[in-house]
Length: 272
Ligand code: ARG
Image 1: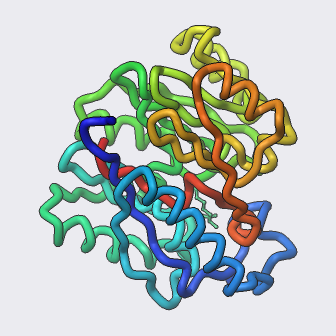
Image 2: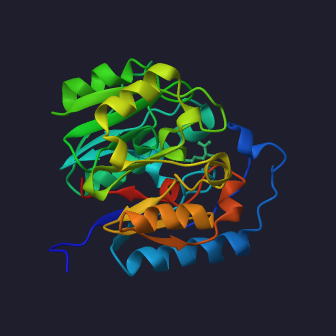
């Protein structure tokens, strides 16, 4: 048994909806969410995670339909919380709720400068094999966020550039797993970023996924030890991960895919 359980923050989908369009997945899905199905899918994910880890909840807020995607709350490292500065005004209403949640629990909370969009653990992920933070820019967070983070967190930061608008957050196409493994969709990145990934992660630890898995958000995975929770995956994906010692748990999240999110987006790891 692992010595301590991982801890994740989630937000119930009380007010979840597609109420505006800020990414390509949301097109054609305006007000098309079946909230009863969304609640059922969210609950199944919650159950799959609570079987293996501890989940804390932040209260959902009317007027913030995307708040369910807690990965975007900010970036946690130890007792430090860097609150996100959302690119689009539609999601900026979430910022004070997340800041308060962490403040109330004694975290050292800091904000990003006003002119510096940064969308938290949607665009910044810790490697699980080395002391390294992967940060992406291109759609939501800006390149300048790296310098701000470097000044606040004591960690080496590798910068990646996202180039496919369907993969607008790093966690939609890139997922560090225990033991220094990495799941990723190479075509979401520019050449220089792909080289940077290949330079930092040995070939035997890199698991490149194909387009079908990428589009089902198989890289948007919640890693809990050797378990990987995803929306949906091909048998090939399950096999590749199985060969490296990982068990894949599939928990359908079709209603959340309509908003451009899935398993990992719906969680924020607190024990970083
Ligand atoms: N509709 C949300 C947005 O576009 C989805 C966020 C998904 N979160 C994530 N970490 N990828 O902001």
